[in-house]
Image (cartoon, rainbow, N blue to C red; front, side, top):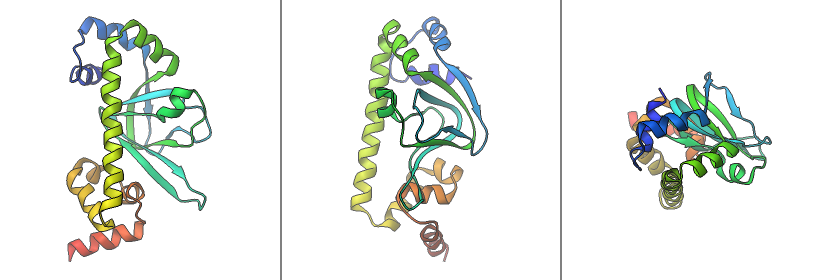
Length: 191
């Protein structure tokens, strides 16, 4: 299953199978059950997580006790609170499995060793982070430019993998919509 990471890396840089065999020991595998917490807010964000199978979501709980999803990760996506990971401090976010998930996890220290021994991976991670940052900017643009209804339909039409796999209340949380409003939008579409 680790070959998924090998194929993903080779979409962005050229990495030999021999180098990949030397890279894999830097990672730990982890399996999560549905709704299992991977990282709890207020704890150290000490690992970066690559999704081999499954789906994760990152969220925080606001002052009113409402859960707000800020990110999803499905197969071939990385997830961590990258600021807390980089600074080796506590995270304000929790990460939870949306469905049963299988991950490759690398600690901050191991990732630093990995990048020292395999400097070509610096380019891989730079590209991955640039893509993630760009996606966050596009999301912000949509939140400012589109109506709530337009945001919902844009998301479900352009990201059908998520729309099929992720519960509607989590999609609503990600888009800043209440579960009731999501139900209303969906009922309007059906009629």
